[in-house]
Length: 376
Figure 1 (tube, rainbow, N blue to C red):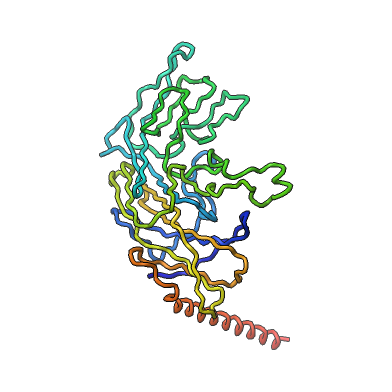
Figure 2 (cartoon, rainbow, N blue to C red; figure 1 turned 180 degrees about the horizontal axis):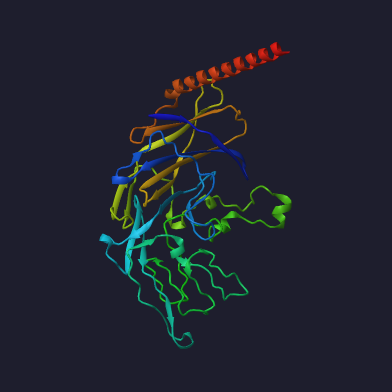
């Protein structure tokens, strides 16, 4: 058992004021065995992190400051590597968590070749490659600069490649490198879903429509509160097919295929731990309460063989004293949860530490007052 304090994040939703409790644990995934980085409590990401320029590259890791996720996000970032470093024209990558699985067909660079007046349009042969980023810049999307009376970018992935709605400029237009194996692109008119394993943009569809309606009525009647039609699934940053109902248990097997040069068949198992959040409204009280925590984010960086797991919970803040003490407790998943009363000694120790801090502060204040008086 390990215990540590955690600060809460206040936020306001349509149904009232809440505290969100967020705890992140990092693991070294090299060797196929997760090793928790003890003593390295990873800081919460206050903003989205990018591998390149925002707006031109996708988020590498999305901010941890989401107040709630109705489902679990499973995310993976990295590159596809050809087996043995031998060039290929296409290959398959797969990401699996428990019973959930998703595969992406990775194809070498291709362009559309157009005949007379675009009567015959066909893709060129793919160029051989040894590695390819599994990222949205290489998925279907992008912009059609020939569109004038409608948006030029593909709403589901404005930073991708291959989007052409006008039918102009087809000859030499790049095709995407990442495809759904079950629905490969056949004609330039196809508009497949963008394929990658990482976070989707906050302003991309269909995610954006879940953010609600920000119109004149909202400005007059509700701003800056969230609109009434705000859907909390907006906080889920994984593609819709990578959101797990009922959250993660914490002992699922994780499998990633062909996304590491030395570990083409990477397999590990989640560490089998639960994180609980206990709190006391008054450290002098015997009452210990608990907030339900959900394991709602799994993120793995296959380049660094690093994994992050995030647990999140929330509670209404009405009637909660400002000096409420929160404590996160890590337990083994296999045994039943320990009774909350068994952690009373931990809270008593916190109370002693708080009393000592208050006493030291009072003594320091008194000494400062004495020095001031003696100097007058």
